[in-house]
Length: 335
Image (cartoon, rainbow, N blue to C red):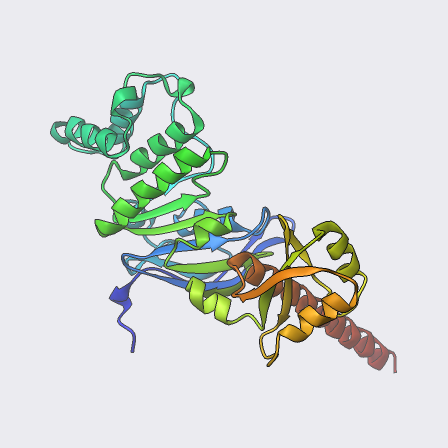
């Protein structure tokens, strides 16, 4: 038996159907360990925001359940909300208040004792490197500063679990790096962080990753585990003329996928191939000048694209079977 106390967040068979029959989540199940950084990765429309809003009790699930610290989100939402710091995609604080005023206001909403509010605000301002900007109106902050202010607001009541919805969208690279340094400091202090992101480089930084596609969790594991699941490895070709080489390879059925990376081409080849050089020779046989080549493990992006393509094929197969059963059933009824 697994000790339930190991998990800060448990999701079991979660489904969500909006009015009109629009199903956004399909039987999602996952567990987030305490002190873990877990990323939900997927494209726009995958259901990431709906999933996170359901986890924090802002949306009621249609099926399944969510436990936060062992507490059912639907049965006791108040107890759950006090344990979670939630940061939405959009900046939700007042644009007409200063940085410090916003934090003091949020502290009052969370019923932080009056004698502790200023101390907490000061500590969070130092922690987030926002102290020099505490008197600046929120509307005059950069995108990165707004994200850090939003994170401070989510931390004001000292939750142990953070749920962050695409926290670095639209943020410049330097601010994004600073934001991640803050997240790592929170992890070292014992926080549990569940975040959604469309960025694969951010997913690589996490303890575990869940791939969400069309409202379904199609895979989950550590970055290493997910890469190991891939049936292919990547053949990195450095060619004399990458554009011409790509056109040549794309015309050959042996190379169904070719991705350009600067002067290099990345070609997925079977992991079980005992002699990968046969693919290099095949490329050279097409008149391509290969200057150098090497094998490398697939990136998380490679793995996601492979799993996504596989999931689409499986869904089409299921739909075809269901359609065939329905047709046969109708014929049987007419008899």
